[in-house]
Image (tube, rainbow over all chains, first blue to last red; front, side, top):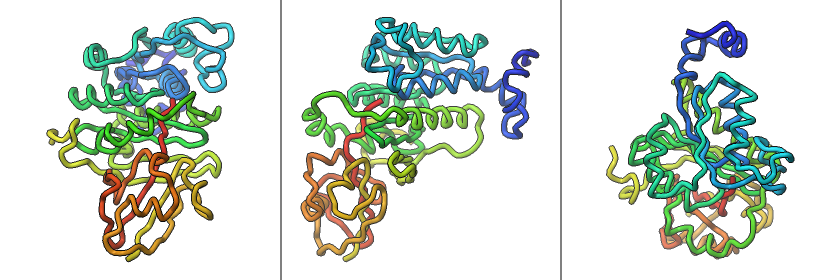
Length: 251
Length: 79
């Protein structure tokens, strides 16, 4: 049952046929883990908080740096040196005090991934490195958790939703062996234009909302690719890899 | 035989006249591999993080067939 305050807060979406009070309650019951409180995680978490996702977990082991602020809008200048998880909780709780924010000041790895992810319904991969993407993908496949994957570079970005066993996993599309030579040669920070993670992050939040509300069509078996220089989106069909080392045994 | 290539994320800058995500129709010889296709397009293989043919991940030695749709991606891994 929604309170009067909640009815007022979410009024504009409760009046949508696809949502209603029942949908809003479904969002309130939803538990979503955002891995990374950077550019993608900032925007996806902000919109999930604004829209009333009841529990948002934030995983990050870094502190806010000046160079983050051009795109990581959960944080601000006064919080330079503060843990990103602490900063994220302050911002999200101020936006919506009705929801719960769990924080994990750790780097996700093979030791802790399953334990942390198992407590959530959906995972948002908002990472800035490939190594952890593979860890998250593997844990989500093992636990059969929906994973909303996003990535950016420069003016470009991409996202896809992974429903283990129902479409390709991250390893089907980006198997480890294919990326090692390039990534080991990748020196220096990845260039990212200010708005690119915002656009991909908001679409990651949209995927989460569709999954929680059981409405619309998630981006499964297709990848959405964004070009900021022409403001264009492209759909790319993606298929499972037979014998994928990660999800090949799932039906 | 005819194939179609799409390039993303800056790889279009390596091909004169190419545009992000737009189909590039190409005629290639029977038995042409994805690696040979990259050579023909003058795209250094180390610039390509991922190659898909009809939505399936492939390696450079994959042999192309008539009508294949090849998509080429650089590393897009930031967050």
